[in-house]
Amino acid sequence: MNSATEANFDGLVGPTHNYSGLSFGNVASLKNATQGSNPKAAAKQGLEKMKALADMGFAQGILAPHERPHLPTLRRLGFSGSDQQVLEKVVKQAPKLLAAVSSASCMWTANAATVSPSGDTQDGRVHFTTANLVNKFHRSIEHETTAAILRASFADSQYFSHHNALPSVEHFGDEGAANHTRFCEHYNEAGIEFFVYGTKAFDQAAPRPTSFPARQTLEASQAVARAHGLSPQQVVYAQQNPDVIDAGVFHNDVIAVGNRNAHFYHQQAFLDTAQMKQDLLTAWGDRTSPFHFIEVPSDAVSVQDCIQSYLFNSQLLSRGDDNMVLIVPGECQANPNVWRYLQSLVESNAPIQEVKVFDLKQSMSNGGGPACLRLRVALTKAERQAVNPAIWMNDEQFIQLNQWVDRHYRDRLVEADLADPQLLIESRTALDELTQLLNLGSIYPFQKI
Image (cartoon, rainbow, N blue to C red; front, top):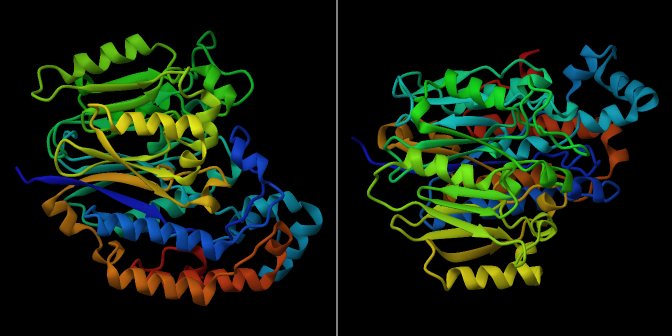
């Protein structure tokens, strides 16, 4: 069997990156709703992280942003006329709607899809199910373009299988890889797919949060597992603690992260931690490597510390041996409790032996850290060669994409700017050029007119 590696595909920040406070339940998003953003800085911060990981030897890819403002959605909602007339009408009649269809939230590709590697699936292909993101209007309009980008990036049907988003109703609310983790000894071998859900949609008596929504349902996770042809013996489901959802932990990747044989999570992350551990150990079975549970106690790091710092919204990556590196945002270093804990962690015998800090303030201010920015895809050597070669990060693409950002992005954007017809022209011009740089073809609606 071919050896395999885990590749990370980061979302490139779009030209209309702005703070409009659209995500109820996401504390950072709501807190910064009135602030001006810097799309150019946001895109460059993301590119710097991608390039740094590529330079560290990790397989690093790029996923394109979406067309924003999304005029097709506005037209579906009854706004007509030329593009400029549509913008003028929506500003007068429904200004918050314009902010919603201009969101750059697709940058958080952890929500793009759920991915099952070929080692886990019945047909031996890598499976993608695009997330419907039905809980938030501004995100529910993403899945058609996301699917087009994924199909253009992973096009070879010999190796890749693509599934449409689940039905767009709350019973099958699906937020993608932000609530999904895969554990394994080696990336090319059969692993354990770990799905975390917020509630059971069809069971009104099931525990659920009371202040903020449970965005992922058990029923959605089960549907994805079926579609991907996963063995029931290698799938584990666990419920997120409703209390931490109400505290602002809107996805599991804000309170837990896993990689290979290590599960790094907060003491309060799950409704039934003991059951979660038992289920994972049962599925792990008699594998050679031990399974590591790294539980962060509340008396060392509070849930609020986790939310403020995004400690768990980090990338946990393998160095090619048993040592792992944790990629964290600068906010972790700024939080005394979190930084103290991380220093003690790397000095212990845990698999996490190194912590690297990145400046991602533009993304963090909108509610997303390093883990939000990437979609993990385990690939064999043959599968990696079948990926669209233009989307891999390397020296040449780093230079080209930075130059592209310099040509097309603004360095300040406030909500009022979204009504500027020139911003739409700038965004479309940028994306049209980007599809050529990344060899994606015509994936945007404006390119098909």
